[in-house]
Amino acid sequence: MSSPPTTHRIDAAQGPSRRRVFSGERLAARVSWYAPGERMHRHAHDCHQLSLLLLGTLMEQTGQGEERLAVPALGVKQAGVAHANDYGPSGALMLGIDLPASFDLQDTLGIGRAWQWRGHALQPLLLQGRGLLSALFAGELVAADVDARLWELLAGMATPAERPRGTPPRWLAVCCQRLQDENVPLGDLAGELGVHPVYVARAFTRWMGCAPSVFRARAQLQRALPLLAKGQALVDVAQQAGFADQSHFSRIARTHSGLTPARLRALLLA
Image 1 (cartoon, one colour):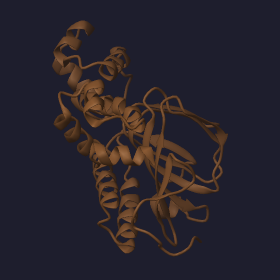
Image 2 (cartoon, helix red, strand yellow; image 1 turned 90 degrees about the vertical axis):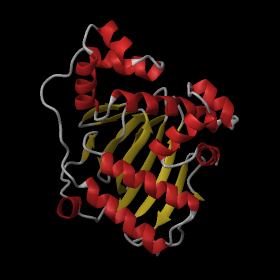
Image 3 (cartoon, one colour; image 1 turned 180 degrees about the vertical axis):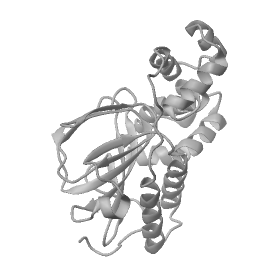
């Protein structure tokens, strides 16, 4: 058991890229920023970890397999599972919940596998996670409220994933890469791929769990994160990341992270 709830604001913990946001009797929560290209060698934790990938990219390997992620996803690692991580060209922003190894994930959350990631049917969780992060940064919550909202977030994580069936189209990887790298219009991209824009939109959403426009907006924000981490001026970051202007940057940041660009910069610089 950890100590009783001690804080409802974000305090520094365990290095510049990881911050503890809550410590309670039965669970703790953290927000982590991993820089582009950052890697973690094979390691394990003495607690269960449930992680919500809010922004960025991730490749994770365990003895059970490998996952490569470029969209928001939910990851579950039981205590003791050895894993290695590569955060790719975009880095990653994560909200995580730590539970003691004695916590029964199967009985409580219906999670029996030792390791899994899922990236579909997560919109309610993403909204909860962003809202919680925003409220924590604004100092709007007392410890009891944080505890309650974390348990509510855990309850949502227990929802079964909806996975598509069949084989993804071959053009999907090309489409993802183009949307990550540039602001190409969907109609132009569909023409280059030789498929109809409606088909691209439907198939992309089915396999990636979000619309192409949403994927592109997240990619813009992901390009902005390393620049914010360097402390660059917001207007310069907006221009370099491909936003129309600073207002556009602010809208996308609040929509996809729950934080304004200024608060994101403060988080990444801490």
